[in-house]
Image (cartoon, rainbow, N blue to C red):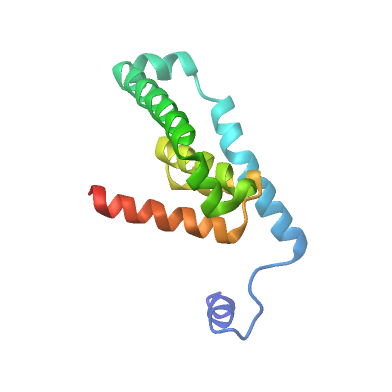
Amino acid sequence: WRSPFFLGSVGVLPPGGSSGCKILQLLSLQLATPLLLLGADVRAAAKRCGPLLLAFILAASATLIASCVAAVFSHRMLIGALGIADGYKIASALLAKNIGGGINYIAVCQTLGASPAAVAAGLCVDNIFALLYF
């Protein structure tokens, strides 16, 4: 049972499965989170989280307000560096990342259709500021 895994790892067998298998994997990944959330008891979760949920809402709101203020004051630099098409997409993705984590950055970039160069530039800037901050 291990030989197909080994042969796939060293490049003898092609990676992945059939196209049907890939479609089913993608569909199951896209449905997993909403289905988990639909089964959650929101009232019980809110009761258990209590002050933590309030702190998260406060921090997320402050991050949103700060990002909007920063966009107003730096929109010329943002558009100059990334262009009008990608500037606000990357700013939105960085806002989502600061609220919910790195997976949100990629999800927002993919959803808004940011160019690969702009996505890389946003990650680069984010990593530089994280190094300076920490």
